[in-house]
Length: 98
Image (cartoon, rainbow, N blue to C red):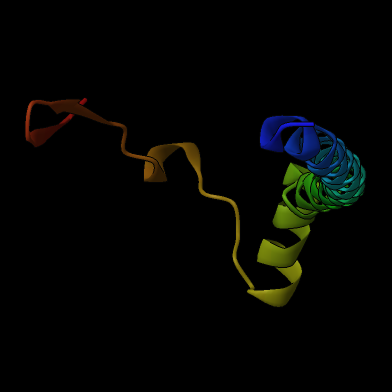
């Protein structure tokens, strides 16, 4: 039996072990990546719900009726009369009275 024939089974065994280790490593990476995707999916859902909640809150807080109530009751403001309102139109960098 030659030296080359003695080494072939050893090389085959080392190759099979290396392939098995690479396979296990790749399976572990797939599992880890799947958990990361799941975690980020949950985070996206939480942020989306928070955004919806904030949009509802913004809409409620900026209602014209609410702003009018705050202006008249808390800030003691009154509605302007027709002759008190001056409309301005912008032309370039200068505002012009209409």
